[in-house]
Length: 338
Image (cartoon, rainbow, N blue to C red):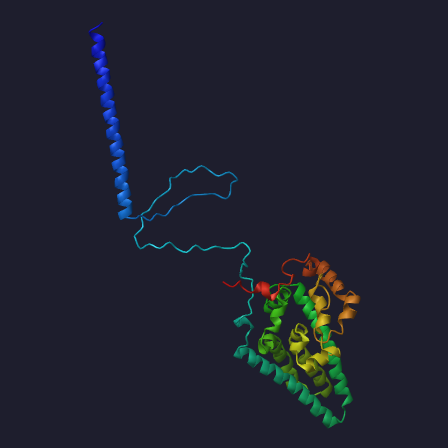
Protein backbone atom coordinates (compact mmCIF):
# COMPACT_ATOMS: atom_id res chain seq x y z
CA UNK A 1 0.00 0.00 0.00
CA UNK A 2 2.76 2.39 0.81
CA UNK A 3 4.26 1.82 -2.59
CA UNK A 4 0.98 2.32 -4.47
CA UNK A 5 -0.22 5.58 -2.92
CA UNK A 6 2.79 7.63 -3.87
CA UNK A 7 2.55 6.26 -7.36
CA UNK A 8 -1.16 7.13 -7.62
CA UNK A 9 -0.46 10.52 -6.14
CA UNK A 10 2.21 11.09 -8.75
CA UNK A 11 -0.20 10.10 -11.54
CA UNK A 12 -2.91 12.42 -10.21
CA UNK A 13 -0.47 15.29 -9.96
CA UNK A 14 0.64 14.68 -13.52
CA UNK A 15 -2.97 14.72 -14.71
CA UNK A 16 -3.61 18.02 -12.96
CA UNK A 17 -0.53 19.56 -14.52
CA UNK A 18 -1.55 18.25 -17.96
CA UNK A 19 -5.14 19.50 -17.52
CA UNK A 20 -3.95 22.96 -16.53
CA UNK A 21 -1.67 23.07 -19.54
CA UNK A 22 -4.54 22.13 -21.87
CA UNK A 23 -6.77 24.83 -20.35
CA UNK A 24 -4.08 27.41 -20.95
CA UNK A 25 -3.58 26.22 -24.52
CA UNK A 26 -7.39 26.37 -25.14
CA UNK A 27 -7.58 29.87 -23.70
CA UNK A 28 -4.68 31.01 -25.89
CA UNK A 29 -6.37 29.49 -28.97
CA UNK A 30 -9.70 31.19 -28.22
CA UNK A 31 -8.03 34.54 -27.70
CA UNK A 32 -6.06 34.12 -30.91
CA UNK A 33 -9.22 33.21 -32.83
CA UNK A 34 -11.11 36.21 -31.46
CA UNK A 35 -8.20 38.54 -32.23
CA UNK A 36 -7.98 37.12 -35.76
CA UNK A 37 -11.71 37.65 -36.42
CA UNK A 38 -11.50 41.16 -35.02
CA UNK A 39 -8.59 42.00 -37.32
CA UNK A 40 -10.43 40.54 -40.30
CA UNK A 41 -13.61 42.53 -39.54
CA UNK A 42 -11.61 45.75 -39.25
CA UNK A 43 -9.82 45.19 -42.55
CA UNK A 44 -12.76 43.72 -44.48
CA UNK A 45 -16.05 45.19 -43.27
CA UNK A 46 -19.05 43.01 -44.11
CA UNK A 47 -22.46 44.37 -44.99
CA UNK A 48 -25.28 42.06 -44.18
CA UNK A 49 -28.95 42.00 -44.96
CA UNK A 50 -31.13 40.36 -42.36
CA UNK A 51 -34.20 38.43 -43.44
CA UNK A 52 -36.87 37.51 -40.97
CA UNK A 53 -40.14 35.68 -41.41
CA UNK A 54 -43.22 36.89 -39.60
CA UNK A 55 -46.93 36.27 -39.85
CA UNK A 56 -49.67 38.77 -39.18
CA UNK A 57 -52.53 36.29 -39.56
CA UNK A 58 -52.06 34.70 -36.14
CA UNK A 59 -52.25 36.20 -32.71
CA UNK A 60 -49.28 34.23 -31.43
CA UNK A 61 -45.87 34.67 -32.98
CA UNK A 62 -44.83 31.36 -34.59
CA UNK A 63 -41.45 29.89 -33.68
CA UNK A 64 -38.57 30.80 -35.92
CA UNK A 65 -38.04 27.81 -38.18
CA UNK A 66 -35.32 29.25 -40.37
CA UNK A 67 -32.06 30.80 -39.22
CA UNK A 68 -31.24 34.38 -40.06
CA UNK A 69 -29.42 34.60 -43.37
CA UNK A 70 -26.39 36.78 -43.70
CA UNK A 71 -25.47 37.71 -47.24
CA UNK A 72 -22.20 39.57 -47.72
CA UNK A 73 -22.62 42.69 -49.84
CA UNK A 74 -19.99 44.63 -51.80
CA UNK A 75 -18.21 47.54 -50.11
CA UNK A 76 -20.09 50.14 -52.21
CA UNK A 77 -23.54 48.67 -51.47
CA UNK A 78 -26.25 51.17 -50.58
CA UNK A 79 -29.45 49.87 -48.95
CA UNK A 80 -32.69 50.77 -50.74
CA UNK A 81 -34.86 53.53 -49.37
CA UNK A 82 -37.82 52.03 -47.53
CA UNK A 83 -41.30 52.80 -48.85
CA UNK A 84 -43.79 53.51 -46.09
CA UNK A 85 -47.49 53.34 -46.90
CA UNK A 86 -49.81 55.09 -44.52
CA UNK A 87 -53.12 53.43 -43.74
CA UNK A 88 -54.81 56.82 -43.90
CA UNK A 89 -53.50 57.71 -47.36
CA UNK A 90 -56.08 58.07 -50.10
CA UNK A 91 -56.48 54.95 -52.24
CA UNK A 92 -56.93 55.69 -55.93
CA UNK A 93 -59.18 53.11 -57.63
CA UNK A 94 -60.41 52.67 -61.17
CA UNK A 95 -63.66 54.36 -60.24
CA UNK A 96 -61.93 57.52 -59.09
CA UNK A 97 -62.51 60.31 -61.59
CA UNK A 98 -59.87 62.98 -61.52
CA UNK A 99 -60.81 66.11 -63.44
CA UNK A 100 -57.25 67.25 -63.94
CA UNK A 101 -56.49 66.91 -67.66
CA UNK A 102 -59.10 64.17 -68.01
CA UNK A 103 -59.55 63.59 -71.76
CA UNK A 104 -63.03 62.13 -71.23
CA UNK A 105 -64.27 65.60 -70.24
CA UNK A 106 -62.78 67.41 -73.23
CA UNK A 107 -64.51 68.07 -76.55
CA UNK A 108 -63.35 66.37 -79.71
CA UNK A 109 -63.88 67.45 -83.30
CA UNK A 110 -66.58 64.77 -83.63
CA UNK A 111 -68.41 66.29 -80.65
CA UNK A 112 -68.22 69.73 -82.21
CA UNK A 113 -69.46 68.41 -85.55
CA UNK A 114 -72.54 66.85 -83.94
CA UNK A 115 -73.20 70.08 -82.06
CA UNK A 116 -73.01 72.03 -85.30
CA UNK A 117 -75.43 69.65 -87.02
CA UNK A 118 -77.85 69.69 -84.07
CA UNK A 119 -77.88 73.48 -83.83
CA UNK A 120 -78.30 73.80 -87.60
CA UNK A 121 -81.26 71.43 -87.55
CA UNK A 122 -82.98 73.39 -84.78
CA UNK A 123 -82.33 76.72 -86.50
CA UNK A 124 -83.82 75.39 -89.73
CA UNK A 125 -87.03 74.51 -87.87
CA UNK A 126 -87.26 77.94 -86.28
CA UNK A 127 -86.39 79.73 -89.52
CA UNK A 128 -89.02 77.84 -91.54
CA UNK A 129 -91.57 78.49 -88.78
CA UNK A 130 -90.82 82.23 -88.80
CA UNK A 131 -90.95 82.34 -92.61
CA UNK A 132 -94.29 80.54 -92.66
CA UNK A 133 -95.67 82.91 -90.01
CA UNK A 134 -94.63 85.93 -92.09
CA UNK A 135 -96.17 84.52 -95.25
CA UNK A 136 -99.45 83.63 -93.54
CA UNK A 137 -99.50 86.66 -91.26
CA UNK A 138 -100.28 84.42 -88.28
CA UNK A 139 -97.79 84.92 -85.46
CA UNK A 140 -99.86 83.85 -82.50
CA UNK A 141 -100.18 80.16 -83.33
CA UNK A 142 -96.43 79.53 -83.91
CA UNK A 143 -95.52 81.45 -80.73
CA UNK A 144 -98.06 79.50 -78.67
CA UNK A 145 -96.75 76.28 -80.20
CA UNK A 146 -93.22 77.28 -79.22
CA UNK A 147 -94.31 77.97 -75.64
CA UNK A 148 -96.01 74.57 -75.47
CA UNK A 149 -92.82 73.02 -76.79
CA UNK A 150 -90.82 74.73 -74.02
CA UNK A 151 -93.22 73.54 -71.29
CA UNK A 152 -93.37 69.97 -72.56
CA UNK A 153 -89.59 69.80 -72.96
CA UNK A 154 -89.24 70.14 -69.18
CA UNK A 155 -91.75 67.31 -68.69
CA UNK A 156 -89.94 65.14 -71.25
CA UNK A 157 -86.56 65.79 -69.61
CA UNK A 158 -88.00 64.59 -66.29
CA UNK A 159 -89.39 61.37 -67.79
CA UNK A 160 -86.13 60.62 -69.58
CA UNK A 161 -84.03 61.49 -66.54
CA UNK A 162 -86.17 59.26 -64.32
CA UNK A 163 -85.89 56.36 -66.75
CA UNK A 164 -82.11 56.33 -67.15
CA UNK A 165 -81.56 57.03 -63.46
CA UNK A 166 -83.51 53.95 -62.41
CA UNK A 167 -83.22 51.38 -65.19
CA UNK A 168 -80.50 49.87 -67.35
CA UNK A 169 -76.72 49.98 -67.16
CA UNK A 170 -73.71 50.86 -69.27
CA UNK A 171 -74.32 47.64 -71.26
CA UNK A 172 -77.83 48.66 -72.34
CA UNK A 173 -78.03 49.00 -76.15
CA UNK A 174 -78.30 52.51 -77.61
CA UNK A 175 -78.76 54.28 -74.25
CA UNK A 176 -75.89 52.63 -72.36
CA UNK A 177 -73.52 55.60 -72.40
CA UNK A 178 -76.26 58.01 -71.28
CA UNK A 179 -77.37 55.65 -68.51
CA UNK A 180 -73.82 55.25 -67.25
CA UNK A 181 -73.27 59.01 -67.30
CA UNK A 182 -76.49 59.87 -65.45
CA UNK A 183 -76.18 57.12 -62.85
CA UNK A 184 -72.53 57.99 -62.21
CA UNK A 185 -73.53 61.65 -61.97
CA UNK A 186 -74.95 61.01 -58.50
CA UNK A 187 -71.53 59.99 -57.21
CA UNK A 188 -69.54 62.68 -59.03
CA UNK A 189 -72.07 65.51 -59.70
CA UNK A 190 -69.37 68.19 -59.95
CA UNK A 191 -67.83 66.60 -63.07
CA UNK A 192 -70.64 68.00 -65.22
CA UNK A 193 -69.34 71.52 -64.54
CA UNK A 194 -65.90 70.45 -65.82
CA UNK A 195 -67.18 68.99 -69.09
CA UNK A 196 -66.57 71.12 -72.15
CA UNK A 197 -69.64 72.40 -73.98
CA UNK A 198 -69.68 70.06 -77.00
CA UNK A 199 -68.62 67.08 -74.87
CA UNK A 200 -71.63 67.62 -72.63
CA UNK A 201 -74.22 68.05 -75.40
CA UNK A 202 -73.06 66.01 -78.40
CA UNK A 203 -75.15 62.89 -77.62
CA UNK A 204 -78.39 64.87 -77.50
CA UNK A 205 -77.34 66.89 -80.54
CA UNK A 206 -76.89 63.68 -82.50
CA UNK A 207 -80.35 62.45 -81.47
CA UNK A 208 -81.91 65.79 -82.43
CA UNK A 209 -80.21 65.70 -85.84
CA UNK A 210 -81.58 62.28 -86.75
CA UNK A 211 -85.06 63.05 -85.36
CA UNK A 212 -85.69 66.63 -86.48
CA UNK A 213 -83.93 66.73 -89.84
CA UNK A 214 -86.59 64.58 -91.60
CA UNK A 215 -89.30 66.86 -90.16
CA UNK A 216 -87.50 69.92 -91.51
CA UNK A 217 -87.32 68.38 -94.95
CA UNK A 218 -90.90 67.12 -95.13
CA UNK A 219 -92.95 69.66 -93.15
CA UNK A 220 -93.75 73.29 -94.00
CA UNK A 221 -96.32 73.98 -91.28
CA UNK A 222 -95.15 76.97 -89.23
CA UNK A 223 -97.02 75.83 -86.12
CA UNK A 224 -95.54 72.33 -86.17
CA UNK A 225 -92.08 73.63 -86.92
CA UNK A 226 -92.37 76.20 -84.13
CA UNK A 227 -93.21 73.48 -81.64
CA UNK A 228 -90.50 71.12 -82.95
CA UNK A 229 -87.82 73.82 -83.03
CA UNK A 230 -88.33 75.02 -79.44
CA UNK A 231 -88.94 71.53 -78.02
CA UNK A 232 -85.87 69.97 -79.65
CA UNK A 233 -83.69 72.97 -78.82
CA UNK A 234 -84.58 72.82 -75.12
CA UNK A 235 -84.00 69.06 -75.05
CA UNK A 236 -80.62 69.42 -76.74
CA UNK A 237 -79.50 72.16 -74.32
CA UNK A 238 -81.05 70.53 -71.24
CA UNK A 239 -77.69 69.09 -70.23
CA UNK A 240 -76.21 72.59 -70.28
CA UNK A 241 -79.09 73.86 -68.12
CA UNK A 242 -78.34 70.89 -65.85
CA UNK A 243 -74.67 71.89 -65.70
CA UNK A 244 -75.56 75.46 -64.78
CA UNK A 245 -77.77 74.11 -61.97
CA UNK A 246 -74.60 72.66 -60.42
CA UNK A 247 -72.62 75.89 -60.75
CA UNK A 248 -72.34 78.72 -58.29
CA UNK A 249 -73.87 82.09 -59.14
CA UNK A 250 -70.53 83.85 -58.88
CA UNK A 251 -69.17 81.70 -61.73
CA UNK A 252 -72.24 81.81 -64.01
CA UNK A 253 -73.01 84.46 -66.64
CA UNK A 254 -75.36 87.16 -65.28
CA UNK A 255 -77.99 86.33 -67.92
CA UNK A 256 -78.06 82.68 -66.79
CA UNK A 257 -78.45 83.73 -63.15
CA UNK A 258 -81.31 86.05 -64.13
CA UNK A 259 -83.08 83.24 -66.03
CA UNK A 260 -82.65 80.88 -63.08
CA UNK A 261 -84.03 83.44 -60.64
CA UNK A 262 -87.00 84.00 -62.95
CA UNK A 263 -87.76 80.26 -63.07
CA UNK A 264 -87.13 79.99 -66.80
CA UNK A 265 -84.15 77.70 -66.21
CA UNK A 266 -83.81 75.14 -63.42
CA UNK A 267 -81.94 76.66 -60.47
CA UNK A 268 -79.27 75.25 -58.21
CA UNK A 269 -81.48 75.32 -55.11
CA UNK A 270 -84.29 73.46 -56.89
CA UNK A 271 -82.10 70.77 -58.43
CA UNK A 272 -80.14 70.20 -55.20
CA UNK A 273 -83.04 68.14 -53.81
CA UNK A 274 -82.46 65.55 -56.54
CA UNK A 275 -79.05 64.79 -55.04
CA UNK A 276 -80.32 64.15 -51.52
CA UNK A 277 -81.92 60.93 -50.19
CA UNK A 278 -84.14 59.23 -51.24
CA UNK A 279 -82.95 60.33 -54.74
CA UNK A 280 -86.40 59.89 -56.34
CA UNK A 281 -87.64 63.42 -57.05
CA UNK A 282 -86.93 66.63 -58.98
CA UNK A 283 -86.00 64.89 -62.22
CA UNK A 284 -86.90 67.74 -64.59
CA UNK A 285 -83.86 69.76 -65.71
CA UNK A 286 -85.06 72.36 -68.23
CA UNK A 287 -87.07 74.79 -66.11
CA UNK A 288 -87.99 72.49 -63.23
CA UNK A 289 -91.59 73.74 -63.42
CA UNK A 290 -92.97 70.19 -63.52
CA UNK A 291 -91.06 68.90 -60.51
CA UNK A 292 -93.51 69.95 -57.81
CA UNK A 293 -96.54 68.58 -59.66
CA UNK A 294 -94.92 65.26 -60.62
CA UNK A 295 -93.54 64.64 -57.13
CA UNK A 296 -96.76 65.62 -55.34
CA UNK A 297 -98.89 63.46 -57.69
CA UNK A 298 -96.59 60.43 -57.26
CA UNK A 299 -96.39 60.05 -61.03
CA UNK A 300 -92.99 58.39 -60.99
CA UNK A 301 -93.99 56.03 -58.20
CA UNK A 302 -96.99 54.95 -60.27
CA UNK A 303 -94.78 54.33 -63.29
CA UNK A 304 -92.39 52.29 -61.15
CA UNK A 305 -95.25 50.10 -59.91
CA UNK A 306 -96.45 49.55 -63.47
CA UNK A 307 -92.96 48.54 -64.61
CA UNK A 308 -92.52 46.24 -61.63
CA UNK A 309 -95.80 44.34 -62.00
CA UNK A 310 -95.58 44.27 -65.79
CA UNK A 311 -91.90 43.36 -66.27
CA UNK A 312 -90.72 42.42 -62.76
CA UNK A 313 -88.01 45.08 -62.80
CA UNK A 314 -87.21 47.04 -59.66
CA UNK A 315 -86.02 50.66 -60.02
CA UNK A 316 -82.80 51.71 -58.37
CA UNK A 317 -84.67 54.20 -56.17
CA UNK A 318 -86.34 51.31 -54.30
CA UNK A 319 -83.00 50.11 -52.95
CA UNK A 320 -81.31 51.63 -49.94
CA UNK A 321 -78.87 54.34 -51.03
CA UNK A 322 -75.34 52.93 -51.23
CA UNK A 323 -71.94 54.19 -52.29
CA UNK A 324 -73.16 54.55 -55.90
CA UNK A 325 -75.64 57.22 -54.80
CA UNK A 326 -73.50 58.91 -52.15
CA UNK A 327 -71.84 62.01 -53.44
CA UNK A 328 -68.05 62.00 -53.43
CA UNK A 329 -66.49 65.43 -53.24
CA UNK A 330 -63.86 66.57 -55.69
CA UNK A 331 -61.20 66.56 -52.95
CA UNK A 332 -61.92 62.91 -52.16
CA UNK A 333 -61.69 61.89 -55.80
CA UNK A 334 -58.36 63.52 -56.52
CA UNK A 335 -55.31 61.27 -56.02
CA UNK A 336 -53.26 61.93 -52.91
CA UNK A 337 -50.14 63.99 -53.58
CA UNK A 338 -46.82 62.29 -53.17
